[in-house]
Image (cartoon, rainbow, N blue to C red; front, side, top):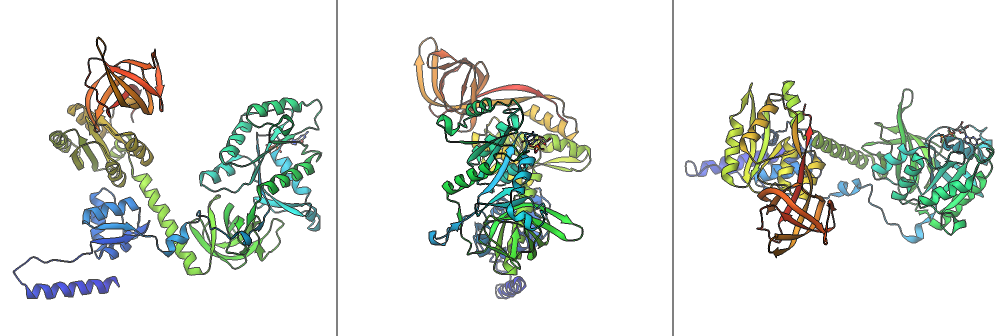
Length: 614
Ligand code: GDP
């Protein structure tokens, strides 16, 4: 289609030229709008823009990034390319895009929902008995006997108690749990925190509680090793209550169970408590739709290929299903339960092991089943593009230190830089000074030199093009700073041109001296001003970022431009002198020898620390 379009264009142009030869320059009617999806490749975007891929590659090169026709582009890059071509770009949400949103919850009709088994994670301090407890619980499974007690390790298992199932994730410890949470997946309905009666609350016990609380998972406390002589469970109950887990016996709402993983004492009661808590939580799913869930483990097996353990969280998984797990797809050609038995269907809360994926997914990846192979493949490939694009983004940002290293290694011939300054004249002066620096064939390429504060769009451009931002007499506001931190974009701030140039030159020689780097403590916004004879103007402020530090250096910023550099004279909370005032609090500030304070001004409190560079 692209070819045809080009041919049509060429025809049109040829006709056009014939008719109006020598009267007007050639006009090509490129589209003025383009729609794209996250992770669109250079080639696909070029097609939509009715331009040659080479043109896009050239633009990207100008922005400081080398790409090829098959490279995926993140949306900020597409926007920059569009900007360059004067085209309005809109992010489209097409059918595939909608399918890709694994995390969006499909809302089921209430009548389609049925009860499902709770999924439980056991956490606690090392050696408190997590593994032993998981083993003991596994052995209580009556069905185990039927299979001669053989269990496969697939990262999770189910036990039946009072005719109802409970699913346990059997990768004890926090890593699996944290890894999944970090990836935004919630797999656990209930957390059992194990505390050894002879050891008490330890650092990882606290960590486990924090994880469970943050994930909003209900907690049951299992006091383990009560078979040991002389153990004192009251001490543990009291230590736990200090951490906010108060036993029902003391009027709290946390269930505490005394167990011994060694003798099996109390384990059945623990399982019944889990069931009780699950009933209260009303855990439900709709078995009557395409399955979705989370990968709990995956590996490449020499003989069998990609082996993945999945937890079905909704819908029913079938042998033969087309599935996408993270960024990989495949068709399930074998499915087994934790006993290693072949199964054809897996209901919600069932852990299974599957064969048939093309690549190894990562624990914590979400999965979803699709109607047909084509959609599954397209979804997986777009997801992979997206991930590649995101990774490209992260790796492209560079600090001055990285840069010095790259130059030393001879990998860098051109340094992209963005200059923002209080006035255009200075921006130009900085630009020409930077462009004059020549160190062994390495030169500075100033992408943008403008008057004005550092904006998010500067950070976006820097991120996309590997550039460093130099601010001259301007300050980034809190939003811009946090975006820069997120994108790994370095912002260097100066107020003396030769120092800025010196720093750049040193970096280019690969020899940055240890320098005193500025630490910004925080920013406060002036909300009121009071004139007091003898003292001068007092600014009534709200700390909007970080903190204000007494006697620190300050900058007064108006409309993102530094209008005064100086020192703080006083910092007060109400009428008292304060050493520091934190974000979200009001304070009164006066500045040494400076009274021209206005409502809306930003006072930045800062200091210095020595940093080793390179
Ligand atoms: P994990 O690091 O939390 O997985 O702890 P383990 O399950 O590996 O147990 C650590 C040690 O405590 C092992 O030597 C177990 O045999 C022992 N242990 C675990 N549970 C009990 C118990 O209930 N009673 C006694 N006496 N020892 C236990």
